[in-house]
Length: 241
Ligand SMILES: NC(=O)c1ccc[n+]([C@@H]2O[C@H](COP(=O)([O-])OP(=O)(O)OC[C@H]3O[C@@H](n4cnc5c(N)ncnc54)[C@H](OP(=O)(O)O)[C@@H]3O)[C@@H](O)[C@H]2O)c1
Image (cartoon, rainbow, N blue to C red; front, top):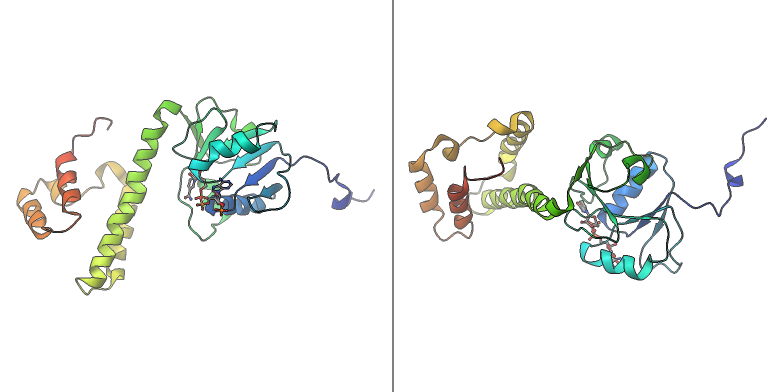
């Protein structure tokens, strides 16, 4: 018996997924799904067609538009509504936060498969929520989500600002090639990944108050001086570690 040609699959079959949005995450998820041969429909605002039916709606649009969008456009749809915001908790959709950052470039299948998904505590089983994916996942009490996200933003986004400041300073003020600091960034990252508890070096870790004072004096008039000072004041005072 010959194989059933693909064209004979009923066209009206409801797809497992509808990806809503056309931003960074939507494009990455569509790419990930295509690498895994997961069929997904795609809809974003500006398309002329109506929002199609699906078993799951992945609402991958700006955080501040998610609730209104679901209330206005998906209220009568029976499929599971899922959002991927790390900060939002809403009764209108299940939260599944992919814990990484998505650049303009697409990633490899290996990279996508490593991404942890942080699910709302009361979310359905992962296999029911995101069938076809085998990503690592964990659950979080929605009451803790805002604080969890604040930690992610501080670590990932604010450290990025500090590195950008360093590279800008190298380029403009110190007349050094920014690439000269790449091995420092590489080694610091490797040390954190290998042994994050012992990865801190430098004057704070050594209790070298003379160097800290010299650093603060040198940063007089710099917008980031108060950030250095706040690190000095806050170091060792975290309540949760
Ligand atoms: N990027 C990341 O690294 C990352 C990581 C984890 C989670 N997330 C989450 O992923 C979701 C999407 O973020 P993103 O980074 O992909 O954002 P983005 O690149 O800024 O794209 C936002 C998308 O939302 C659409 N949109 C905005 N308001 C809308 C509305 N009222 N109705 C319909 N569509 C609307 C935009 O449409 P137009 O193009 O027409 O404006 C655009 O397609 C957010 O919940 C975010 O928290 C992002």
